Amino acid sequence: MTPVRVLIVDDSASARAVIRAALSRDRDVEVVGESANPMEAREAIKALTPDVMTLDVEMPKMDGLAFLEKVMRLRPFPVVMVSSRTARGTSAAIAALELGAVGCIAKPTIDDPNTFDDLAAKVKSAACARVDRRANFEPLRPAASSAGYQPDGRIVAIGASTGGVEALVSIVSRLPGNCPPTVITIHMPSPFTTSFAKRLDKLTDAEVREATDGAAIAAGRIFVSHGGSHLEIAGGRERRCRLTTEDLVNGHRPSVDVLFHSVARTCGADAVGVILTGMGRDGANGLLAMRQAGAQTVGQDEGTSVVYGMPKTAFEIGAVEKQAPIHEIAGAVLALTSAHPSRSTSHVARG
Image (cartoon, rainbow, N blue to C red; front, side, top):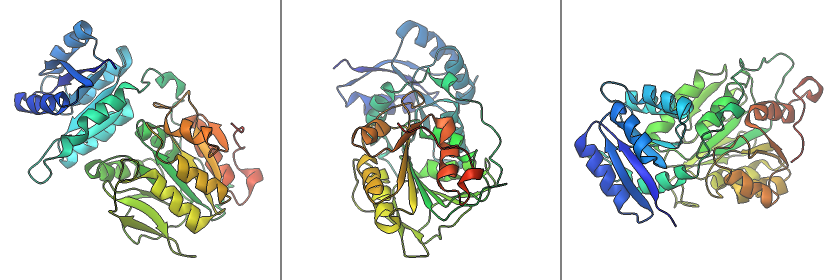
């Protein structure tokens, strides 16, 4: 296997050293250069043609977001954001993911010194991402009108990983204020899930919150998994979020499989499952369990997936009933959960 070639961009020499040390522990990763600011990085990209770039959010001369926007417009390739755990930093990291970065990771702190343990894995995952496909996304439309749409009570469960921020922004921004009760698991650490939920909350009239243990699930509410905890659905007629810190599943906590399996057990046919872009197979078996329990299921298509891993595996094992490009998935969800199907957006074609 040819090592993944990485360029490190950070204004702090000590931070660059720590990043280099973390990446150098993996023989499948090669650090080919370091830059202290975007101007140096621009020249390094031309000279070194790295496979992946790690990019700090806050830097002098040009901040990371402005530089990322230029990279994605002029020479798109995989970028992993490296951010501090401050509220400002995490919000900026979420903005970076919307611009096209394929991953984010928090810098180590005294309270959590091990955040770089997964850095090499994130870089290798990023190297497999397709970041030159942004033209496949339609511009965001206003959130769908609630006129004519009434939820039928079914729960919507969504799973995502690499590229999931963009995909979820596309879906949530198109949901009305009375959207179906929705739960989302995304592979993202806790410093970022809080900021991500707040960002999504600004894009829709529905209420978007980071999931908390015992939170009531209802129409008009969207819950995003808390980083570091599995999200499950529990309860009978009054369903609630349940958070656990049990072992990693498929290498993840939160795990999409954990969410989907709980929905299959708790909701049966009263649910819709959606699996989005992401590396690996997390969520595939859980989505199959949902479909076997009577739920309807949708998978993001290859053309709009940053990484066609999770949805591909789910489709290949028969878990996906329909495939659709990302800009059609919100409409599909509304069609599948409408109490008046004839008034809602038409169903997507079967995959």
